[in-house]
Length: 139
Image (cartoon, rainbow, N blue to C red; front, side, top):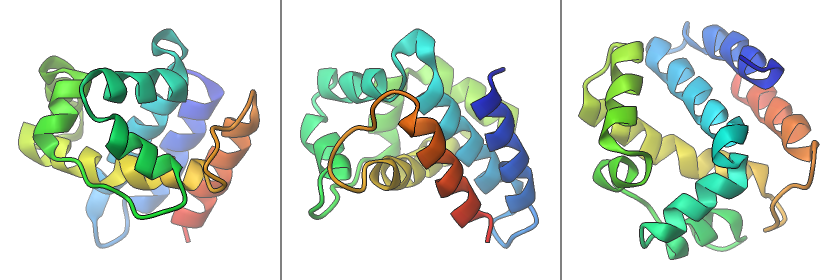
């Protein structure tokens, strides 16, 4: 587990006391892990996966400065794979549908916050931006 994942987990734990319960913090940790996963190309790799599954317009809207297009839980399962979503659900104690739906809600918001100027962060900038995002969500 990388430093970024560890920090995301700590902040996710802080969020678990809120009205949304532990699943919100757990989903945030999952989203940050997906964005930070160097094996799959990090944020750029995740964006590429959405593009390859016909969701390029949606992910481009999350990065851009205009309105944000929604995605469904089924679309998230298509991009990430049903097995990965099932593993996430099991880890968080959620149904597969709830996990996919939560990711469909949270992932666009996180990508939007990480790309405030409509540009992908370069190099280590994503770590700093992710930490700032997590600090803001913990308030």
